[in-house]
Image (cartoon, rainbow, N blue to C red; front, side, top):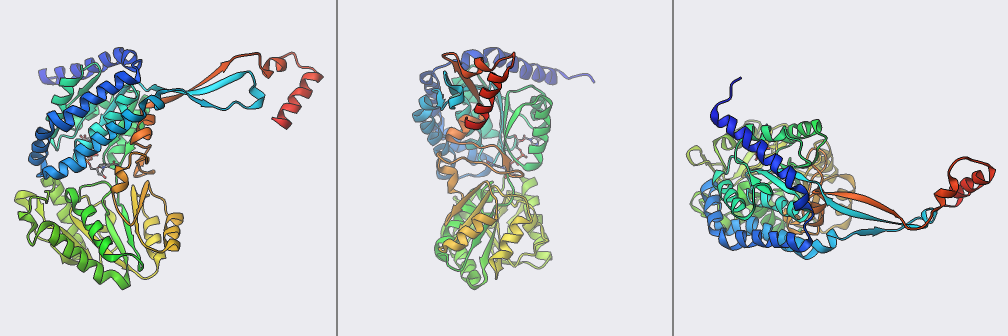
Length: 475
Ligand code: NAD
């Protein structure tokens, strides 16, 4: 097949950038903590000050994201990640001594975190800055060179990120490659030393398969359905407010949004009414006129979300709040649906849009059984004052992360590892865990004085056998 000019040049430039980063990796990798902090400082100023307004405008153009929400869920996340890395980097980079067993007397051992090398970050559109520059902070802190492929669905934000990176870093250190699936596929052919992918589980499988060809390590930050349980002891007003916020922020396009709710039957009506009340408070009687209410990112996702709603209503669900939509503007009301059949799309697929299914349970085990019959979630939320119920849910389910009496906010604590488990992800990010993801924990053993091993080398005899027996027995 003959390549067109633009295909040839794009293929060449991706390959060339990769080769130049490969060459440059030791220079970048041998930087001191001070030098890496200087790079993080440059990124900090760019995001918090120089390009902040441009980023806010870009995200408004991409999906009508309110500037205050850009500040809170994009800018703030990146700047806290930078601040955290800056204050801990020296310690993370210094050798981590480990103790020496008696049998290895005469030696010392430590862990040296070395950069993985040339890394690839592939990011999604739903938090286009946060989920691109967040991992980038960890990659820079760990001393890597990086190629970044942001999402094609938020092109204005991708263009600003490209400009920021091109202004601050040479392309043989960090480069942004814009493009869609084809570009991503082309990048995935290359033998990167690490791939950090954030996106859908189905695409995560494609990434892991491609990485396997080169035995490239991966961090996969994926998604899925994050269940929420509200039991009979919970503060229902607080639960309603926090769930309404966590679900409809970013128009429900959050990997850790409370995907659906199981509420104790004695509290269901109160809960549904209070969620509706909160939604009116947040976005007014008509959310389409609220500047705090985003849109679904594009027509494809709009159609997907609307089809889930139609499917559940056809199967018998009730729309308790909202339900209207407008295809011309990718608008959908903040929508609450109750009594949702478990075989409907809303209970089977990740919703990733502004619909909250609420189902009741009589016995907590029903909720636990439903959760465990599905893929392990990225997050699971528990609203309860009852320690026994909290422990029962914690001990009988599995999830990447959990909030008790809140949702989604565990993402903001840089001291916690963030990530999923199996279908919701592999590996962790944020703070030290992000630094670790982009580092190889190199084991170093140093022989300082003759050790016991020298006495156990061949040829063997009965005295040596006695020593071996003693070693097995006592050390
Ligand atoms: P996506 O997987 O469709 O796209 C993510 C990236 O992968 C984009 O840059 C895209 O260009 C690229 N891509 C898409 N198809 C590809 C293919 N066939 N081969 C190679 N690359 C491909 O995800 P999205 O729609 O942008 O984001 C939504 C998904 O991401 C949801 O499932 C959500 O839960 C998940 N997500 C997870 C996290 C997390 O931190 N765990 C955060 C945000 C979103």
